Picture 1 (cartoon, chains in turn orange, blue):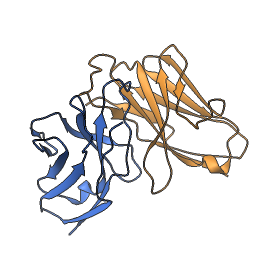
Picture 2 (cartoon, chains in turn blue, green):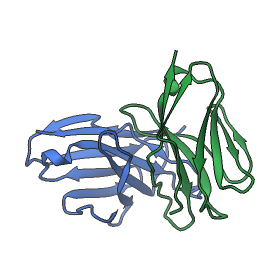
Picture 3 (cartoon, rainbow over the protein chains, first blue to last red):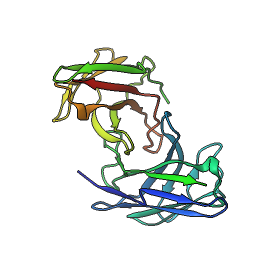
Picture 4 (spheres, rainbow over the protein chains, first blue to last red):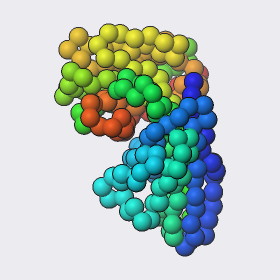
Amino acid sequence: GAVVSQHPSRVICKSGTSVKIECRSLDFQATTMFWYRQFPKQSLMLMATSNEGSKATYEQGVEKDKFLINHASLTLSTLTVTSAHPEDSSFYICSARASTGMGLNTEAFFGQGTRLTVV
Amino acid sequence: DAKTTQPNSMESNEEEPVHLPCNHSTISGTDYIHWYRQLPSQGPEYVIHGLTSNVNNRMASLAIAEDRKSSTLILHRATLRDAAVYYCILRRDGTASKLTFGTGTRLQVTL
């Protein structure tokens, strides 16, 4: 199956610094990528939809200036957590769908996730 | 989005079949029923999906009620590696292909 690679898998940063997470579709082109956040024992919450070559669409309650998303190519989207604070510590997961066959019945591919710890 | 309801948790013995139910009474005619699972500390992975007819693949089977208001994911022989949170998700037309996750069912598999 298609592969989505997320990097890094784990990162620890100091409060106030910024962290960049990369999401790559390795063997397919993804016009759209999605970013989720998951707190312990909770479900995935969609943060934003990333569209190649245009601005991301953020879900209600997600600060776009804090969570910067760049989708510069059909195989790469990045999420930058700016001025990170301990409450931003979470498991961040990206997802991508192939540019072709984007119908409702096609599966989504997920990265392995990035565990961010802000100290 | 149409809502799905799943039990919070289920238990199964290894090598036994597991039936994971999902209620989706407000499903619309064009909603596909998708199942994903998430192993500990990993991103979700696709399991199976269907529209009206029952579906089988190498991972599982999906049984869809005739009125489509419920479905059941069937793992024919549970293994310890099947311990995960299983999410039943409806994909509705016009939602830009995004997946909205509910709380899912945490499946425990014991020896």
